[in-house]
Length: 314
Image 1 (cartoon, helix red, strand yellow):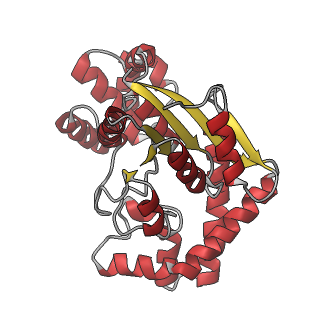
Image 2 (cartoon, rainbow, N blue to C red; image 1 turned 135 degrees about the horizontal axis):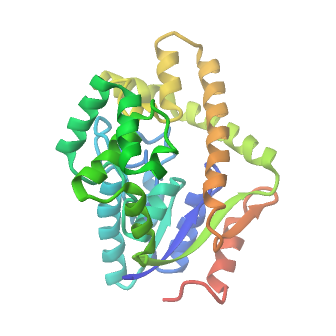
């Protein structure tokens, strides 16, 4: 374990950026983004990335580290973000890991990518993928069933990615992915962390805030941002363009829906995503939840966290 970090997580539009800024200023901290879409350059409005003014207040890390045409992996995130955290700790400061991508946060704290696609033997993965395409999902699932019935029982023949990954782990290591995951979970975490999660006491208040944020994104130029990305040659099929807000904007720019309809789709998708985020973050029993009753009182929450007996001390 190389150090202690503070985590600010939770669903979209709950005030994570504002709270992390306040905490960084109070705790001599620097912010390490944990958002799978904020890693991409040129995707600022639709990802609710920290503004230039906010970044001027406190050093930010793990923003704009990849081109939007790249496919960014959790393994790469762990490698790059851990370097940032280690450097911040070495300088006597507090890393404040902030974002809504639960897999990125958990993987960073643990110091591993949990068998993510960015790890392993890429050539073997390609070979197995080609075999899947040639032989079909049922045949490959049967092959997996012979060596790892536990994992095979959890998969559907159409789940190409997970079937190929499970076979790749077995053929490259002689260990089933079930064994691999079990051993991985037994390793001590890389960082000791205090987790703060944000949401609203009233779910409808959360949804109303999400809707308001989407309208603000449109006013700030969401459609223009997507148009510029497409004009620069970014494929609508790229991983980055599958992000909420971007794929719906593409539909509007193609004329398949109106802009108002696209925004309604973004709001709907964002609410569904918020529900999934809540489910993910609630799995961690040691998380301290702050449930806003109304408009978030960022200053009061930050001061309370700073003064808490179990708070991060510098």
